[in-house]
Image (cartoon, rainbow, N blue to C red):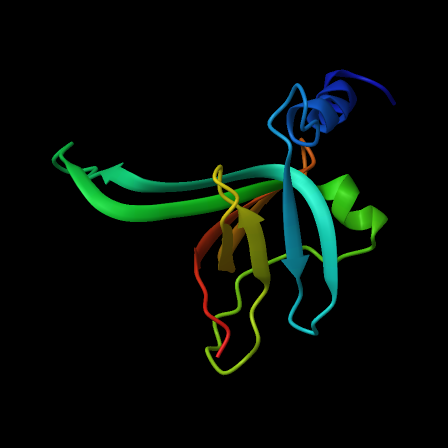
Length: 129
């Protein structure tokens, strides 16, 4: 059944995965078993945030990626998620910043939207020991 939801998911290919006219940016995803796949999606790494109680700017970091679920399923790849157990291997995300410097993060949590077909992953800095 085609409808607005189907059209919106198809539009994600342009919005999230088109590197020339959309927000597409190369993103590497590694699952806890070590399997790696390359995707194109939306990424962000913002270091200035606002305190929600006071509205005052504070120093912090908010890193995230957004990927199409259909692209993850095509690999096939499981739905990425945060791994709470610190002794277990996490899902790892790597992408370059605008200057070409590689940034590596682990997934803190993921918020899939099964209606639209996208997953947003909130990240935190990760250094493989």
